[in-house]
Length: 104
Image (tube, rainbow, N blue to C red; front, side):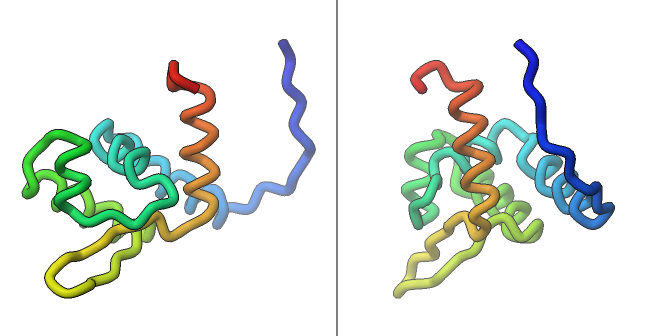
């Protein structure tokens, strides 16, 4: 099966941004966090419950994803909610799930 892609110009800034995001996503736990978030806004405890590791570990990975401008956050009362802050990342995660996840 041959897949042909339309010819597009290669912009070094776009390449750097893509590499930057893919590097941040490449850790299995961070990728799992992104899959859990999807298009939702979820508090840290809910992420911990769904991912299955310690809150401190999740918080470290959330900080990395936020630093890389992949996640945004909002505070409501005493809870911080995280969400994917880039529609392109949502599209990329959806495509990866379609290709790699057995339940799709």
